[in-house]
Length: 428
Image (cartoon, rainbow, N blue to C red; front, side, top):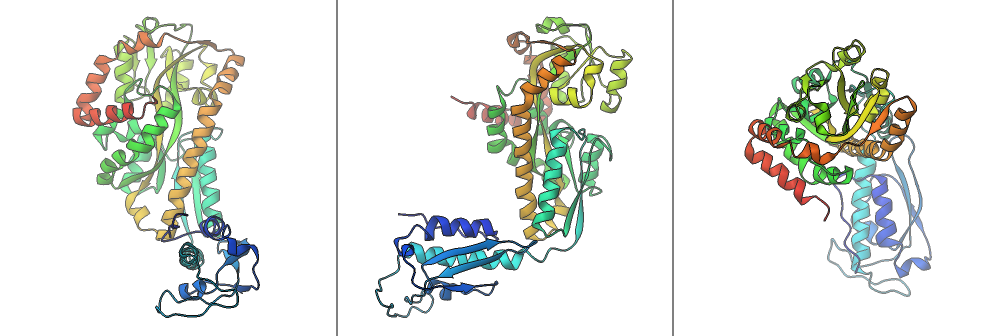
């Protein structure tokens, strides 16, 4: 038995097409339709449509924002599901299977919503800022979101993208979003921990064994858990962009174990877990704004830093460093953050589009980061960096003080919730 198709409150034309393909076209009645009628527009009645099955999609197309769907139906009279009356079928008649009638009603409802809801977007501009370079996957994802939103709203809704810190660093972007001065930004969890202290737990080192493990945990637990806290600060995350596993770079200091970092002056961002992790191995941690990092490395203010390889390449940090240690000490992901009041104030159709495109943008970063990491490492080798694979266990066994400190800041209960989710989503 085929499952009853779901009718979404606001369905797009892809949904309608899938309903036909899945639930209507495979039926035996479709193999020899006798006559057809075309229906246009959004003034479709479920009862009338039920009396015109079986059906065949003749054409599905979409000029600008409004979908126009042409559906051919074989004329056939059946008992009305709304009037409760009885009727005689035409020659060769038989009772219509319930699942086909259900599909008809589903299509009518979906079609009415799709055609009626797609064309009435008001002209507006949404501002989205991030700090990644224009060559980074985050910028590509932001541009994809902007393009798709524009296309799906007939050009009425424009997403302006401000890359490379044009509107400020991440703490500034987070503040602007929470205050309503900026519509959207891509911000790390570490920078959001000042608004929701439990997010400090996500800065813990060595949480995830690989990208798939991180993605499963984020999708199943982190997103709703995170948004519970952010809602109190008028913010909401729509998706989570991959930034990549963070690695360690130095100048003139090969790193093969945790002991090699003892006493090394290294710049670490102001994320609780990262600072605690490098403090635990005995490094001399320094807090330097990212905007000043390149100059600080060039001038020898610090000997090393840590970042995903994509950032090391995109921001030319390899020009100041000659050693790359694949420590994989922290999985970095960044939230596509919206001001909640702003988002809630948009018409529901636009909210749905933004949420869908946010996930598509997230998935682009997942593909680019996880599948592109090896190629970036090879590129860094070509640019003169010496690559090592340090002993992971030499780091992990030193992390208890870091976890204790993170647990104090995040709250022990919240830390346990996250660690339980991490373990639950570990592949068996």
